[in-house]
Image 1: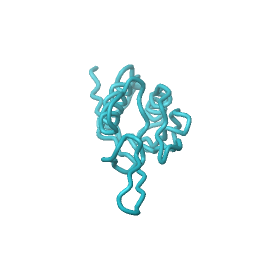
Image 2: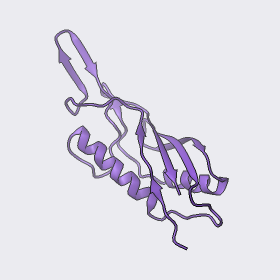
Image 3: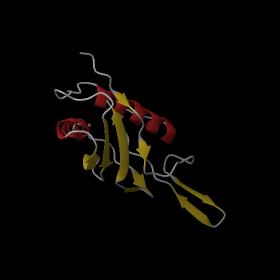
Image 4: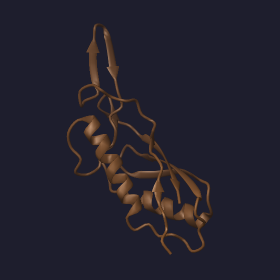
Length: 136
C-alpha cells in the first residue's frame, strides 16, 4: 500500500524580519527588535535564507522515516504545535486530530528534530512556536 503524506504548511508565531541579521534597527528615536528564528544546523545566510532552510529541512525531516500506523485512514488530519525552546530543543505543546497512534508518530518525528541555535530577540534567546498541519 502506498501512503500519501503531505505537509500542508508551517505557520510561524514570529514577526517577519527584513532588517539586519541581529534583528535590531534604529530609525529616528525608535528602536525596533524583530524575532530571529531558530537556525537549523548547517543553515547560513540572511534571516530569510535561514528561515527557508529551516522550512525545507523540517519538511524533509518529518517525511523521512515516517512510520504510518496500521489502519490509518487517508484524509486524516493531525496538527501539532511545538516550540524550539531557548536551548534549541523541540518541545511539543499540543497534538490534535487523528487517532492516537498517528498523533504519537507525528510527536516522535518532531521530538527527533536536531538541536538548533535558538531563536532570539534583542540578542536574548527566545522560545519560538510553530504549528504544523499534516494531511495523510
